[in-house]
Image (cartoon, rainbow, N blue to C red; front, side, top):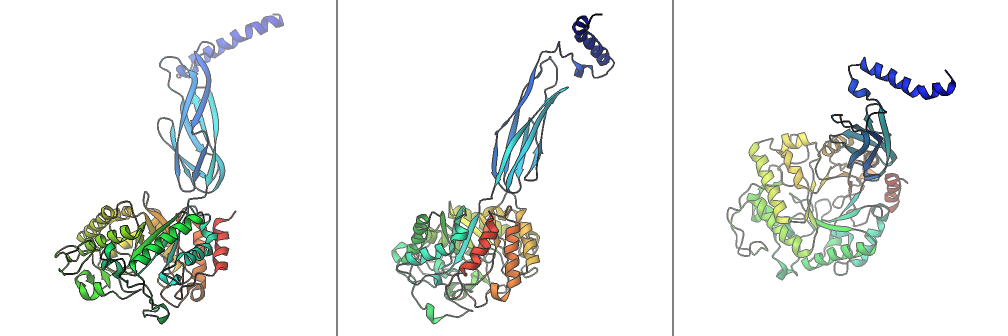
Amino acid sequence: MHAHSLDTARPNVLRSLRTLACAAMSALAACTDPASAPAAPLAVSVTPATITCAAGRSVTIRATVTGGDATPGHATPKVAFAAADGHTTVANGSGGTAEVRCSSRGSGSVVAWAVDGWRHTIVRVPVVVAPRPTSIVLFATPKMLADFENPRPGVAAFLRHYEALTARASEVVVIFAVGNSEHMLMYRGPRFADDSVMWARYTNGKDVPAFDRKLRFRQIAGIVRAFREEGAAQGLTVKVFDQIDPGPEMAWEYWKYTRHPECMDLRFDSFDIRGRLRPDSLTYASAPDGAPAGKLCGEFIVDQAAAYLRDLGFDGILYGNQFGTRGKWEPGRGPGYSAAEAAAIQSFLDYSRRAFGAREIMWFDSYNNVDVERTTFSFPATGYQAFDYLMASGFCVITDTPRYLDNLKSKLTLVPGPRILATLDYVDPWYTYASMRDFPDESRRLEDIAVQYRDRIDGLVFFANGPDGAPVPRGTIDAFAARFYGN
């Protein structure tokens, strides 16, 4: 046979051999003659074509396959996905979809491929994992301001002091902790804006002459405006919260301990949301004719707080020191679990959400993991969903870093759930101890944990002024910020 005849015959010979081989196979349908099958080039495209997401977030992608074998009855091409590096993980779904979980900052790719019998194709999808949006929560008290009537200069200096942390944050939340709760419980409404308040001027549980100044509701409203306006002037997104604390730690609480002790459980020094009010004849913003007899104490304080937040312009509230529960901080230091108490707490949280509307709730947790919070304090598993933010508390005078880390890891499992805030600890607004001085190893370890969990936590919280009103030393903040944000 001449060479040109062999070249002419080769396709027919190969085709015959292939047909014979396929006839011997049980999977004949998968061996369709490529010359006779109505096939088009196999191609796969992915939507979105590039992925940008924050660490800890997920993106759903979908593959579309074109071409392949169009023989009637032929199975559709199979599609699969895989991560090509350590920055992402991939969970294959159905219908050509997958969930891409962005794990850690950096650039990488996800691979998608389609297989149709002996045909296959592959495409790489670029992925950029950006830093997780960070909320910086500055827990401050009126001590940080020298002039309540003209707060703007003090607010401006305060925010500039923390710019190494705040400039790269997605938002700044200032908890302007006016007091424990006396000022909200006694709030009479906008017509009484010149009333003075019991504000958080205690140091080591006592009044300090240096802070013997009047603070009035109208001044609080002015301070809230100053934070928001100065934040905008510095290019920051600023929210301003106040707090409710269950005890008398920051200022004397006449309403809770003297006027309405039925709202306190003195065994734990805790506000008891389950208590029922005795009537009085005082004027309240939420009850102008006096405290309504039989109303739940928890609902009354929420009604008062809602009016106060609305009228003075706050964006939200911190429920401090595990507010809503009875007990304090340590495993076993609470009433234990009961379904009735868990239901009461859930009802209180649901009422809070309805009353506050669009305003946000942050919870200062019990320093314990979710199991301890249930067994010791009856906190319901569904209760965490009521919060927009949750402080995984780790202040050094109360806990140690192994217990704190156990708590933080536990709270990070609350998915979906609130934004989880890690704790830093340097100074305390109400006490003369300073963790950065008196617990230096623990304070540094909190920084290390924040850096280590940078791509899993949603932000940071720390006391931003000491007992004299001074901020945390700037060098300390700048050095930590450089480690936290990196390059």
